[in-house]
Image 1 (cartoon, rainbow, N blue to C red):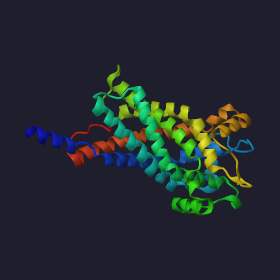
Image 2 (cartoon, one colour):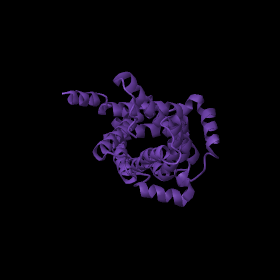
Image 3 (tube, rainbow, N blue to C red):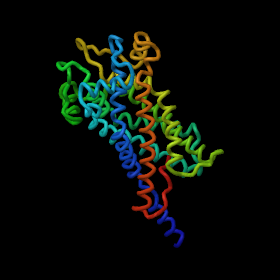
Image 4 (tube, helix red, strand yellow):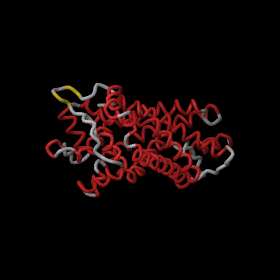
Length: 318
């Protein structure tokens, strides 16, 4: 009888599966509020030169200066509604799925996941999150790039919901999932790199020669290395995703037929290193975003355990 009561108390003090999704989304949204300007700059740099190959910005700071001078300081937060909706859909799904799978692995095998297992779980989580988050991603790309278009060609969406409504009405429901394949491909690579490497770096720093204790220092070190690795591996696919989602149709024909055509044309007309165009703002955005997301997630988990469950935190499950 006493053993059953103890088991029931233990179950009650586990983080509910639904909260894994909610806390993941909250962590992503909090991080996005801080790094949105860098995401906008990254998007502008990736779509500059599309078609003509003409270089529009000299560097990250020139791009940021151009946006502020033309559109004002708040121009750097253009599309913030779509960015937050993206986090509420994409990050909620991917972190929730990954945390759930990670916890299930630890319970079933009674040990931390291997590198291969972490990568596999990251791929699954990325694909699920990307499919759910693609409509918000399409709205975000369009809203972030609108300010660079000639006035006559601007879409002038009022907000993210206006964007989603107009896209559906003017171009059809399936347009909301335009670029879903490269988006899912990028997300699978991002999550395979980001989530798996974060888990592995964190385990190494905690159990390896450094013997780092659980806390913000450990989370920061693992996040920065994870962000760098993720930036290098995912940028070409992010470039393809951005170009496809921002493309226009001429005589009913799209500019690009698919991911491979985008990558080929960019490499051929703009140079192979153009596939990593916007690397600095991408990493400056992804690095801190990774750090902030994981730190927020860890802290939110600790607060939930402490104030809601009344017990010591068992970590984020990552």
